[in-house]
Image 1 (cartoon, rainbow, N blue to C red):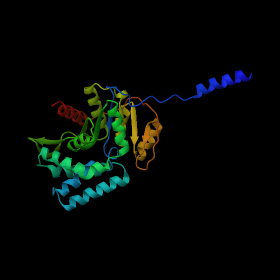
Image 2 (tube, helix red, strand yellow):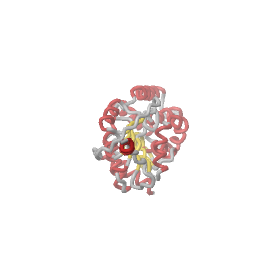
Image 3 (tube, rainbow, N blue to C red):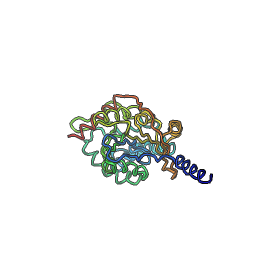
Image 4 (spheres, helix red, strand yellow):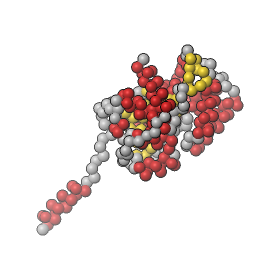
Length: 284
């Protein structure tokens, strides 16, 4: 009886061992990619506000405009969420400031501003997640409402594949002060990711997406591996309900939740426009 009891205990202990979570990201999976929101996900604060600080330093605008940028940035840092009114005001301010300037000039300045204000604000934890995808041989894209020129600089400096961002209209290389379509925000991000995945022959069910904001739930819901990074209250609640993975680098806390939701998403014209422009620039 003792032998039988021992054998049964051994068999039971084998059955009770939890299955190991599959390796992720999967090395060599060329049909998988990762999509990262920028503001408060990859970088502390909002890229557009840091860019505004750099432009002020170069006398693109006066102290009154700087005070507005500073207030918007302080509110964003404290609230940790994107307020549509603040973001719209920031975009309008940025468009009026760059109107009449050459695209090449702003791209060059963007490189300098990254070193001055943005490099030290990259979250090491999120950077490590992006690097894991790169090390696995996968492509990694930033997807942000920030101007595509800024997003492209950040993506290049981090060694990422590329960026999808809001596109400002230019004629003969000079900004007109208008947008091409709408800002790449909310549902538009999901449509941009969908368009890019189709063009690049990616399987969204094998892709990952990362964001801090509930505004990006459409993008997160589109992929098989959604992550809530430094989530706002609404996203944290939704992520827990959907059993999504959570990472919080603001206080050192880290929680992991495993879940693969069904593919979902909402379309917008701006997303397709941003994806098409990114692909065009990549292939030139």
